[in-house]
Every structure is written in structure tokens, then in C-alpha cells.
Amino acid sequence: RGQPKQISTSLPANAHHSPNTMILAILPLLPLAIALEASPSNASTSAAQLQGAAYMDCGTAPLCGVLVLESGYGSGKYHHGEPCVHGLWPETGSYGSSQCISPSSSTADPTSPAQCYDDISFEVHEWEKHGQCAGVADANDFFSQVCSLSKAPLAVMQPLHDEGKTLQEMADGLKSAGYPVFYVDTSADSQIYLSVCASNDGRWVIAATSEFSAKCAGTGPAPGPSPGPSPSPGGQCVPDTHGPACSQDSDCGDYDGCVRCAGSGYCTCVDLSTGRCA
Image 1 (spheres, rainbow, N blue to C red):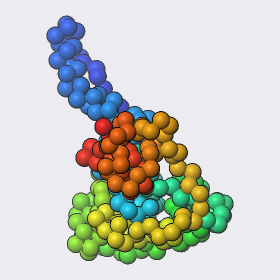
Image 2: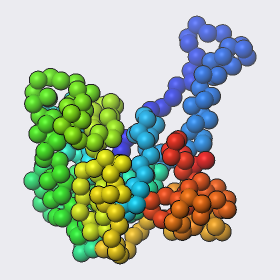
Image 3: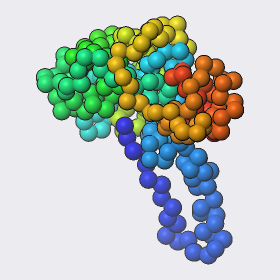
């Protein structure tokens, strides 16, 4: 995921460096500086969140995330003649309330490209950064699901790309076809995020966030141990760490810094309305 843009605080070349001038130049930056300081972790805040993507709540689904589709309109490696899949990312930590469930069979890296990829090194990156938290059996299982899930929405995007439609028109076309567009990345990457979820069996489906609990409710024990955050000490909620165990929001009211019960089954300090710790 990308890095946030650097903010320039330099004054115009013809500006006089008087105290009043400097104060006026800095004032417009204060709200952004305050917002960044209030985020769970400046170092771990995603570029997508800074650009406006919402924090993803899994509801009662143990796993939820985004299926990221490249439009082909981006720059560098993101510029190509047809839309393609980037990957499937469980929204853990500061991105959302998804659990990180380890592979049930093997964590070994893929050794040959999957049907919808052509770069094994990039595929290894996707597996190690995202796939190993997706609750699947192994790398083959993960990429088989990624390719299968992305095939139909990419078929919707391709003719729109051929017609020269814009990124937003592609997103609108996906919505019209019934796909849940979670976020439109208008950065140089030019991507569209569809919301997805999975139950403990690690079978991912495309679903609107409002459907997570119905389509992907947890059923029994997870297929493998989770390397996710351990509960925070002292009965409190801090950024990027599970708080005390809970089953409803009222269970979290007496703990310092906790604002609600997340879909992971632990109290959290993240306010859904802002995507940041309160």
C-alpha cells in the first residue's frame, strides 16, 4: 500500500518572513496535522485511509477485506492494456476488524504464477503480506480464490476500459452489475476495491459490508492459529492491539480507551465514524 504524500510548508518566494506571515501560512495546515496526530499510528495509517477509505467492520464475520482491481489507467507498473487483479487484502489492524487467521496447511511461498498473475515475485509479496492472514489452506488455495473471485468483475471492467471510460465510470459499471464497490482509489495506482468476507473455513465471497454477518458468520474454530495482536495488558484499549474480550458494546464501557466491541470479539479504541482511536 502506498505512502501518504509529503506536505510542503514552504512559503511563496515573494513572501516576507514576518511572524504574522508565517502564522498565516501555517494555519491552514493545523487541522491536517491534528488529524494525523490523532490517528492510531502515523506510521501504520494506510494511504487509502488518508484519502478517505472507511474503516471496515466485519460484523460477526471473522474475516473481511477488499478485492483490489487495477483499472490499467495507473502509472508505472499500474499502466497496462487491460484491467487485472492486484490482490485480496484482509482488513486487519488499523484497516479494519478482520482477524488474521494463519494458513491451515502450509505457509510455503508459491513457486509458479497463478492463472491471473504473471510475476512470481509480486505473487510471493501478496502471499506473505496478505494471503497468510486470509484463513486459507495454502498459497495455491489463496490465489485460486483470488483469480476466481476477480474473473467476473474484470469482465465487466474490460469493455469499459476498451471504450475509454473513466475510473469512476468503471466503478459505476461495477455497481450497476451488482458488485459492492468499497473504495475508488484515484491515486496514481487507479484501482477499485470490492468488499469481500470469509467464514472460519477460509472461503472468500464478494459481499457488501452490510451482508458480512449473514454471508460469512463464524462457524466453529479457526483453521489455524492467528498471529494477530494479543490482548492489551491492564484491561484497556490501545491502537493496533486487541482490547479485552467482549460480545457486545456494553462489555467495553468500563475499560480505559475502549469505545465498542469489534467483530473480532475484542474491545477496540477505533471509532467507526472516524476510523481512528477515540
